[in-house]
Amino acid sequence: MSRRQDSAARELTLERWLSDCGVLAPTRTALTGDISRRTYARFETEGGATVVLATYPASQRAVCERFARTSRLLTGLAIRVPRILEMRCNRGWMLLEDLGPETLYDQPTTQWNQLATYFESAVEVSRRIATLPTDQVAELSPPLNHDLLSKELDQTYEVFLRPEGLLGEGAERSRIEASLDQLCTRLGEARAVPCHRDLMVRNLVPIGPANAGLPSLAVLDHQDLRMGPPGYDLASLLNDSLFPPRQTEHHLLKLAFGGEPPYLDYHRAAAQRTLKAVGSYAAFARRGFKRHIPLIAPTLGRTLFHLGQLPEQESLFALVSHRWAAAARQ
Picture (cartoon, rainbow, N blue to C red):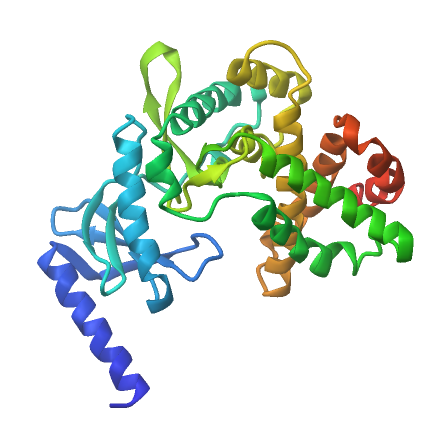
């Protein structure tokens, strides 16, 4: 059988499965989704409703199974996630409830007095995730320890900091890399808690009012749940794509942690997370996904801000602040 024939046979098998599930295959609408190898499509059912098909390539079949496990864990804590309607992970198919086209990132308002309540709901989601059974979460994926956090920054060095001349040369470059490695060491030494790993606005869907006057949010893309540094999910939430003003950020951190600053666990996690994100955006651009390019400069600015809040990174901040601040203004 040729590759074309094999592909046609797989598509026919998928259409038969969808038909058995009450889905009209000819109405497929491709969705943008994330930058992973998974693909998503919206289908209309025989009753006129819509559902979402997630398709996992062969190398991602274990991720399909893990999504089912993390769905059960989060649902057990009354965290809203898309309901799994049907799944055939051995084939790489999962049929999900359609929660609509707009994430928190897509909300029509950019007024923070209106957005803040959504972020308060997200802070509550992060608090609940941190209470998940650690033994069950630890089984899912490798922890965000020093080795993984440091490895994540390797891409940023390769695709952004070095090409843009932001690492310096010789002894200066060694000092920068050593300081960032120390940052990852401190994060890895902190008492790990369960983390979503990518709790940011493009993975949160507003779904209506809830108790205590806060809007309800559904959580997407949760298959990477793992143990990680305290403050990591807050670092993702407050420093990815939408950047709350300092007053709002302080309010949300006080809500999450109590007390007053400094919130050093948060600033350490945010410094690493934002620098990692800069590398991810630059790598996406190299692969032809240009929509994240406008986020590179402001995200690097967030890295610089958080480094400036860390007493142990005072010398690194002094070393990189001028050049990095110039790049963050571009």
